Length: 297
Image (cartoon, rainbow, N blue to C red):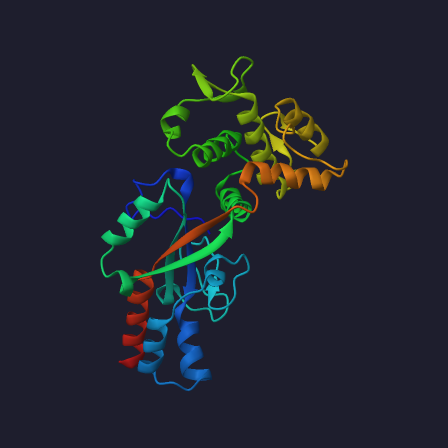
């Protein structure tokens, strides 16, 4: 569940926008306490101690399918779908997924150093992954933040991609007031802005089309791009014209193989990198203490 938390106090200003993904997980403490006290027969105090020391796994934090005690809800006053507990029994985990690399390592170290009560209030998890896997994790999160009923989502997706591809560029300022992004007829590399239009070099524009195609493919009526709705063959034609096929070694005409190689070319494929997960447990710990106090009184 991607989330914007107006009260969060984690300073992300030192990070390029495309390198950090912030999202939250909602969990029911009533379910947790019932598990320990009713099913396992532990005293409330012991249950509280076990809950406080629990270290969350990456699968718990990032899995698409939620299982008890985790659940998803956009309601202002949700009820737990498992036990019907009210909002006061629910806790939020705020998670920050930071892609490792030269653009983020110094900022990540500075952020970790600045956190109060690091080992008590926060949890740090490191995961080895690949360029391809990191890209699709980012793409999945991006798809969850876009409103595909809004005409401007294509520009939003383009900006998000460029922020990820060229993190040192201040794309927020560049896209301010932009109404259209187009393929440049004269640029060989880079970009330029002309009034309310942003022109991208052919290869850069083609990569943006590929991202738009992929992020919309999982939606109803997918394949939407700045060039309109494209079939895979039509997309390939545009990417070939932009030169993205030049370095590919294609042994046949299999569309799936071609798409896989294009994605690897854009994402880095099996190149190794690290993901760093920073888990803000403060709301979780505060709510757990409140629930224990209520049970013990």
